[in-house]
Image (cartoon, rainbow, N blue to C red; front, side):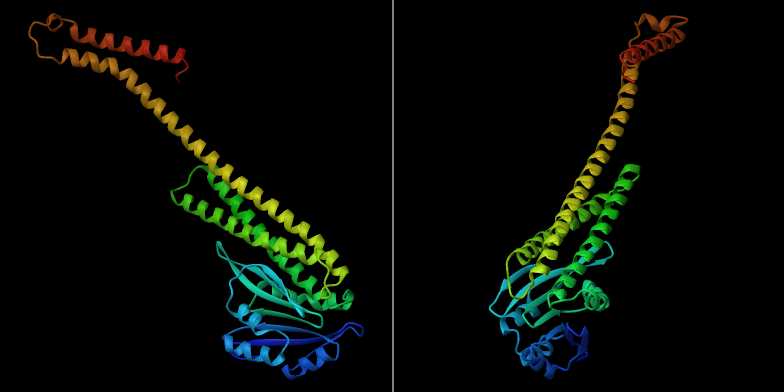
Length: 327
């Protein structure tokens, strides 16, 4: 079923015969009532275009429908008598930023509904790949729960890899030292993205851990084992994310140390010049005074003697500073 602003795809699964077929909206209630499993995938446009068909199916409460159509992209889950309501956040890279894509997953004993407000990257992968897994491995309706989380974690892995590449690029840029003031804005943006992605992973780990450990009629024990293994994957993602943040922070610290070192070298050169010219400035100041009774003014060789004294002072100062390891 499709409209300009709303698309609803209804698929019925027969796990014994390994068959699937698309349904019409009016056939869903009968299929669920007959004990068959149905996947309801809803791409929302205008709220009313989605609300009416879902209310006609009658499997999901109005409160959950309203939350799916108006809530924020925050990963969480809730338990009801007839189903589980899980909210997950997929990620879609958009240039140097990552956009969150909310998907509401309603898991019932005989149906699974995915509600989203537009195309979702990881759901597109699920729709592309689930056929082969259904034919080879599926034994219960929970296989779709596994498919959704498996492709969601692949989505997270791709985002983490992209962020890791951005961190490496930033590290190389800072290491070359030829950067402008805009590097600090890019550094701040990347650090903010890493922190934001961590806030996506933490509730995802909590929800996945809850689904994998708490017994439920909506998720088979076999599927819970696979979900439990995915918790470890999220843990590794979080650890890699923290490593990336540490690398980024250390890179900036190293860059600031390089800048400080170059500044110290410049100041050392300026200090050397100042020390050399300070006594010369003193001599020039003395002999620049307009006193007629200064005896040196009448010396025949006073001018060359002045320059000789200046040269000796410069040599002595440089030798002293060299022996003192000033440069």
